Image (tube, rainbow, N blue to C red; front, side):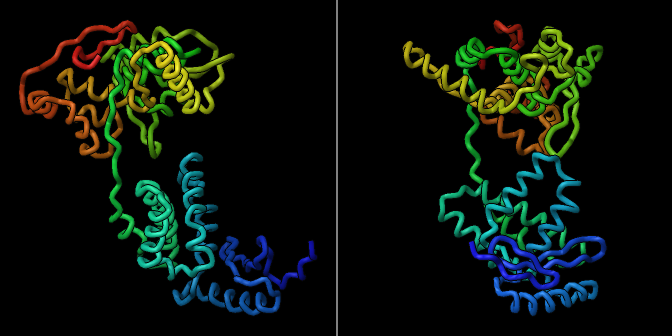
Length: 365
């Protein structure tokens, strides 16, 4: 490999391109010089440095690459959980080819439209495109807080993207029982807990004994965007289920081996369902595969079918909007819908216990 030329002062190599770097207000600012020629890079660095120095006065042209690095270092990792921060960085990587080397002022509606068209043509779903643009919008909002930008032009185009929501599918009791029978360790307990509480997969996997108030029969979880909520364990026998879990020195409610947390649980659960489907096919048993998240849907419909409030359910599930919770109303009769929304004083439905000892609505389980 040929030896690279010596870099000019203030420059460095990133792959085959020279970049500029200066220290300003205690931060490293970097931008692509869009060349591999040291002489050209030196001239562009000098011009770029002058622009950054003028940034305080609002007359500088800032490169998006530098803004992203600053955003990642000084905002993203401090304001988002590790999982969310990584997702944002992956999203930025997905659209990197559209924005690299551009000035901040060039990230406008026309560019966003180009991103949407190109990604859609490549078969990317609107939900994924929107998720990627949320990350870019976060970068733009950060630039506004730093005084480098006045308006976020990503946001309006992003809001126009319509997401196609997959229809809700409820697991059937016999299918759930088949998977429970074939679930090793405490995975069967995780399935039952999801039906009893409506908690998300991640919320259950992170649950600790200290999160349970046995006296009040309550379970405190930390959900999306680090929002905390408390779930009543009494409905559907959640308190009895939690109380029946095997004892362990592990602080976790759900564990395997010597008290270890489950890793790659989603893939493990998918493998169990896949093996169950193979067994069912070989034995001429009717079986419809389902996702772990579908158990949360089942809990929600059971709740409403039992004549409980949809507004309590909204908070129980941690939905930001009641419109999300109302998606479950398609499984209700008009009378059940009225009761769920408090438009009738009559309680409906009747309860029985399934083999796991959980209270379930007769019509669903």
